[in-house]
Image 1 (cartoon, rainbow, N blue to C red):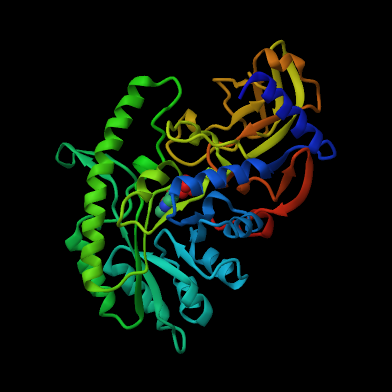
Image 2: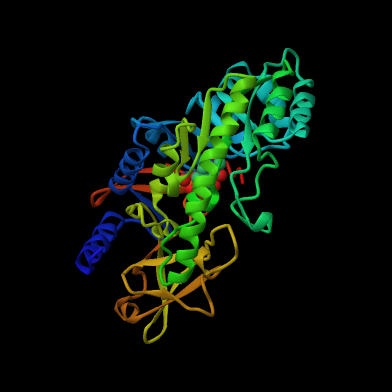
Length: 404
Ligand SMILES: Cc1ncc(COP(=O)(O)O)c(C=O)c1O
């Protein structure tokens, strides 16, 4: 963005929220819609299953699900999936992470409508046993829909080097087929699909600012990983389909939409972060989103020249505990965090010449490093259309639903 555009945006955001007392969080609906449209275009006809952890606001999830090209929810816990099914947000929900919650699994097996709507993730016989034990506690249990989670990580140097999330122990077509056979042999289970999430591509920017050597290494790794995974994913899907028909093959994330969608074996993309376009997703060459989710903090003191201190701010993102997880002072442009203090529990100094223009009560607008985690710090999101707040909607937390 140019300086003039940034100044315009700051004026617009301040005008829209003039009546609100910070701290508060906003979603800029025009930016959100534009980001969603870019994601759908990148998917080129492959549907996007919306990663709810990256949104964490029921109203925005419902709105996104009305868009062409976005279909179904990729949820993060079984209690969340039950809530979304019971409140009719979606009847097509895949829980992307395995569960050990026997209570929620029993509720699922005992709930005729939710049992048709929700698919849970498994990667071992232990998961199958756990589901069977939970289902056995209810009268007339319905079959539980399951999907097989595949390790999509990249291994180099004979397995000594690894990139990607440590998820499933299932890596080969033979392992996937064996688990599929074990599922098919159990009348209480229905095999619905396969999921293989390549975090080392979809969640790792290939253009991190100020780190050219690291960026080159990331690009080499991602090229090799994508080639390896395309072949392995196709072989795994073929091996599983030889055992039983499946409805979906889920892959990718915001950072890999176009490349993952181009794999013939993949039937849907799981993604959500791109809607909010948090700071970590600025570091990709293949797409640019517009910052759609922001939070505003009030200036509460001026410790000296070139410094202003805002209330709160320590909303760190999950992941490796490094600087990339800190929130980022966005507007007024040109502010930075103090290297010694970072973002504080109750106050955060911001530094830079722009601080000298700030008075007590002025707002500093921040971006979170990640997407939905922002919603764990605010009960509400102010939805902005142009230069007005058009609705105030609860986050998951605001509905008393802090699932994680
Ligand atoms: C299984 C799965 N799919 C997709 C994603 C990508 O989600 P997003 O695009 O919201 O970053 C994630 C993120 O962690 C994930 O765990």
